[in-house]
Length: 220
Image (cartoon, rainbow, N blue to C red; front, side):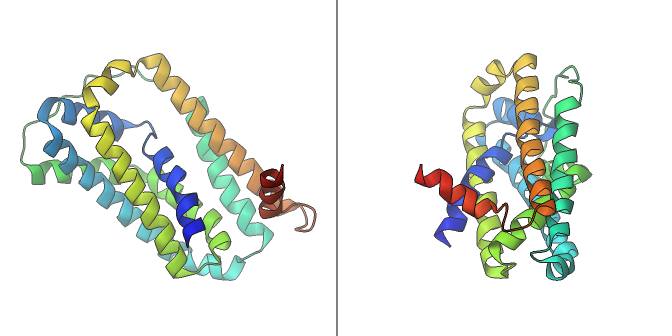
């Protein structure tokens, strides 16, 4: 369980910096309306992620059972991450619009955060791909998967709280050029992960095993 938590922590941190509309609305709301408003919006975003994660888990559960430890599972999951990474890398940066935080109650901001995240079908595709990739390494154990993804969400939310506190400073330093670099960096990471998983799917297990390679690196 401890190893699962340690693996989930950097992933949760990385997800918090996936640049998109929600990222900028969160910063804008926090900078103009304060900490509580930012937290309300972010809770809505997190709820949408939990809904997507639940949908992805139950929709992929049978697939995980049928394809567990089979090459096709790694190829399928790797393809999802690869396509998503290429999309992030090649997508042309749009000129940032000045997103103004509208007045509203905290409940309204929560609903706004939920809807902003929920209408992005790419979020569902990402969670689905992640579950398919991570599932076999967790032995498809519901308890281990619950601990892993709960840790991801908690770290994700905790990092968002820091972003909310530092909203004004972050807005100042996030230039268009830096946003492009962050997106391309995240895209490259996903592309590499996708290629590794696809390679694992095509090569015999005794020739290429991710766990063995990691252990070799740790011994160096």
